[in-house]
Image 1 (cartoon, chains in turn orange, brown):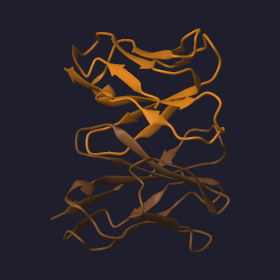
Image 2 (cartoon, chains in turn orange, yellow; image 1 turned 90 degrees about the vertical axis):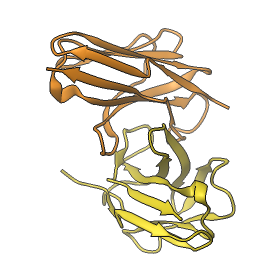
Image 3 (cartoon, chains in turn green, blue; image 1 turned 180 degrees about the vertical axis):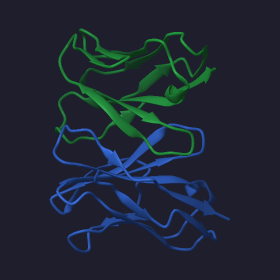
Amino acid sequence: GQQVMQIPQYQHVQEGEDFTTYCNSSTTLSNIQWYKQRPGGHPVFLIQLVKSGEVKKQKRLTFQFGEAKKNSSLHITATQTTDVGTYFCAGRGAGGTSYGKLTFGQGTILTVHP
Amino acid sequence: EPEVTQTPSHQVTQMGQEVILRCVPISNHLYFYWYRQILGQKVEFLVSFYNNEISEKSEIFDDQFSVERPDGSNFTLKIRSTKLEDSAMYFCASSEAGGFGYTFGSGTRLTVV
């Protein structure tokens, strides 16, 4: 079945440093979503990417979808302590329904030292 | 901002007992999901529900699991005979339309002893 791998598993940064997490799918995706989960919390939707090569920005966050629609990345510029949490990518396989299941990556746990 | 509400927040049950986890999705959302997350691990898909029927389910969602939308607002997950390995955080989620982002509830932490 479809697998979504995410690296790194952990990332420790000093406040102000940049952070990137990478997501790779074993199969082509129709779209990919990114979620943030604060410690003890629930996943919160950040963004969805649909088009090949798509790049979207939300303030200090930049999301990219690969040309082959099999990989994605999230880059945070100048991290702040409020960025702490686990970042998950979640992919929906190509060829399925628009409401087909999302397969989550293992997540990258980000800690930010002030 | 509209929320997905889940009750209870924590449930402790004995192995072999039945549990029902309850969710109230956002009122104008049409697609409903259950996911679970074993402590420290990734979020795993259980089942999706649309138009009053299951649209997709995972291998985890075996005969011990069932879902229901008994009225216009509630969406429940029943585990008939719980096992130790069912211990996890169970998240309900809903989305407005196919292909939209999910709104997750705060989860029910199920502990099977």
